[in-house]
Every structure is written in structure tokens, then in C-alpha cells.
Image 1 (cartoon, helix red, strand yellow):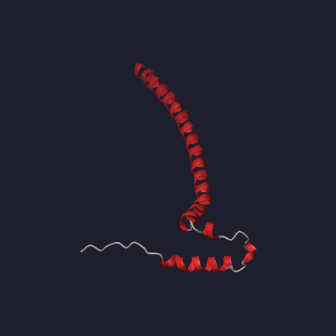
Image 2 (cartoon, helix red, strand yellow):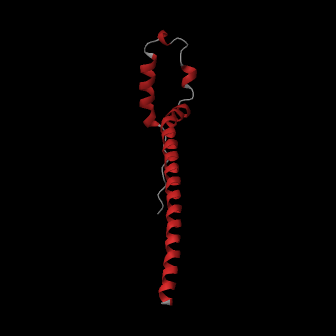
Image 3 (cartoon, helix red, strand yellow):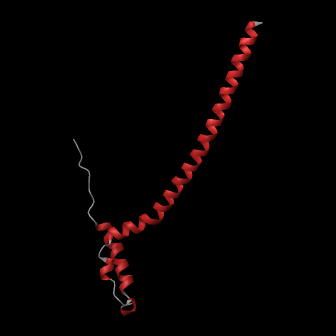
Length: 100
């Protein structure tokens, strides 16, 4: 019978250890969920603000070219937009050099 008592003690300690591990895994799952929510928020903010930042860098002169009265020339915006769309593909691109 001493083997049965020893077996029961070991099983009881393993059970306590498994219970503690389950608690730690639950805490980890909650922390992962909070982190996932934060990552989604950062991704949303990036999706909202990056296009505007790109345009601000791409067209820095645009704000100085805007007329003080937009109704002064009704063709300004359509012509400017068409010009920008047509000029964008003509920008120089970096090409990789082929190695022999």
C-alpha cells in the first residue's frame, strides 16, 4: 500500500500543477486578446492616416498652388487631378541590376 499512497500524492501534486498552469494560460489568453485589439487599432489608424501622409509627401507644392478662391477657375481641380494621374506612372523607378 505505500506505493498507492505515493501514487496518490504525486497525482494530487500534478493536479494542483495542472490547475495553476490552466490559470496562467487563461491570463495569457486575456493578454493576447488585449494585444490583438491594440494591433487592430494601430492598423486602422495606419490605414486612415497613411494615404494622407503619402499625398502630403508626394504633392508638397499642391497647397501653395491652390487658388485663394476655388471658384475663380472651375477647371483648376479637374485639370490638376488629371495631370497628377498622368504624371504618376512617369516617375523614375529604381531598377535592380542583374548580376551575371
